[in-house]
Length: 227
Image 1 (cartoon, rainbow, N blue to C red):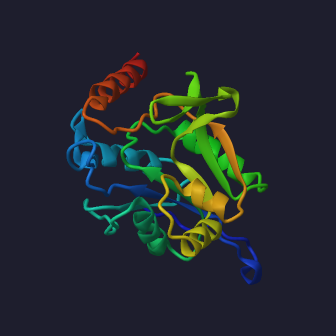
Image 2 (image 1 turned 60 degrees about the vertical axis):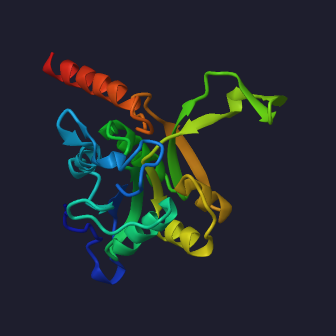
C-alpha cells in the first residue's frame, strides 16, 4: 500500500516527508520449530496481522514486506540481511523508515504514534519502544554470579524501531556485524537513539508456548472493542 508523497509547494526545494515501514517476515524460526511468521492467530497469519496495522496507520505511506510471503521481497540469511533487502526496496522519496518484526503481531497504532512523534522532534536519528525491567538482573560467568546490575538503568526493547532512512542505510552499509536490532547498528555508527514507552502486549512470538498468550491478548482487545 502506498499513498502519494508529501512535498513542499516549491518544487525547487521539495523535500519528501514519506514514511515507510519494513516488516520482516523471513527466517527459519529455529527456536519455534519452523517459519513462525506463517502461523495463524485467530485465522490470520501473524505477519499479515503486523502488516495490517501499518497499512491502516495514517502516518505510514507504504509497507515493504521482506520474506517468502505474498508480495514479499526476498529476505537474507540473517536479520540484518533482510533489513538491507527492505531498505533497497524503498522508494527514493522515503525519508523515514520503521522496521518491525513480523513475529510481533499485536503491535498497535499507539506505539507507531509514539515512535513517529519522537522521531519528528529532530534531535535523534533513531527511536525505539522500550519497557522497564522489573526483575532483578545479574551478570554471570558460567554458574557464578559476578555482579548485580542496576535495573533502573535497563530496559527491554521492542519494535517498530524508527530511523532517519539515510542514517539507517548508512549504518548497514558500514557494518556487517551480527546484531539483534537495528538500533545497535545506528548506535555503533555514532547515531543518537531515543526511547519511548512500549506496550507489554506487543509480545514477540519466539516459542510455540507464546501462541496461547498472543491469542488471549488478542481476544481481550477484541472483547474491549466489542464492549
